[in-house]
Image (cartoon, rainbow, N blue to C red; front, side, top):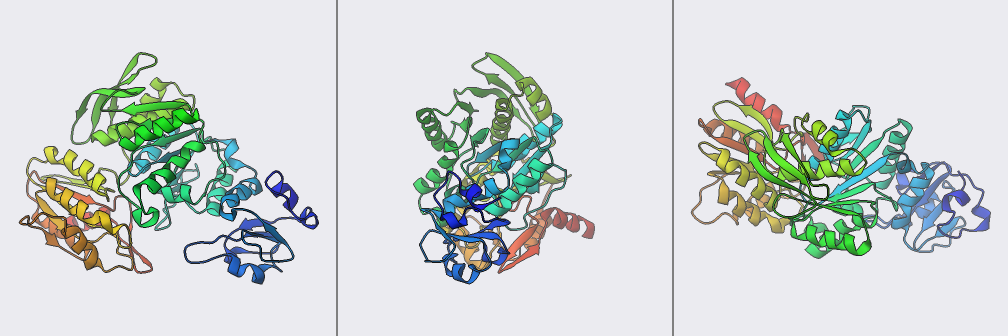
Length: 482
């Protein structure tokens, strides 16, 4: 591919660059090889423009946002925004070769995306997944991120898309994080379906305000052919109105009111859900049995079902495939069931804890024991609210760490404890494993232990390191020791 072909219709380029071949496209100065196009992007800690001159003789050309006066320079208005478009073109517009669907929101993205993937696989379709649990290009091999973001950086993302296209993937379901949307990690894609779960306080260390956070999530609906939106959520109702204003075909979902697809007669038990799903437009109702409990998981299942349905699959086939699913790793996952029950879940925000613990409380025949903590170097403002919410439902509070990163673990604990009302006892453990062992050691018949915050993750981020930490293994170790 030549520079002229890569930039055709995007912007004018110097005539002498038109026929120069391109062997790669990157914004990482460490990856630049002979014939690479280097795109200068200003990040939070490094500005690619500072490396441009040193790479001028290696790269086939340099894309800049601030004109530097280089011999082979292409200046654009917004280099960050143009970068994924160049990658998409370089890799042959891979997302046009399969059905690309995305889910955004604070909570529920991982569950919805993985339910979609399991539904389409149960229907016999080769399906890729990109999200918090890792990456699966459709060949059955899952690669855990072990630390990198929910939505990969643009070059890695489009390499994955290209691999999926080459391997004949039919569907790809992706979690679209607010940071990824705000940083334009996607080209001007036409997502077959975009879905919105909910919005609660999170990532304000990055976005600053809830309105900025909401605006980033809303960007997905400028790029999708169909939208599925939860209107039980206040921000979801705003997204739905935005879609109507923009003329985006919309289907709303609800477990608590009127919507295009809504549930009735929901029955929850310890490890499953049963409900009636009604398609208002067609006047059809479907009985559903689903192997996950919790009203929020019923909503996740409905969103996933409607998403797949909007790609052209009859709803009765979708629901038949949904009923075969056993669950999603780290989402209300039972690690032990005997005299007492141990579950792990990714709940790491006030809203996540509210939904998880309020659901588990009536299922606990004796006490509800919550083991939880806040992540270091992340939105500290939400920490007291996490403590307050946990105290509202749990009978026993064990406050510990999540991934402290470079922040003092005791500081994250202190911030959480500020929200626990005076007089309510709690225990503190900097060592999360010790906290889990303490909870297991005090458990009585009929108790439910909720390990909150890590979910599927098999590591703790401590300083610059990712230390292996798998709660499933830790619970198993406790019982082996007797």
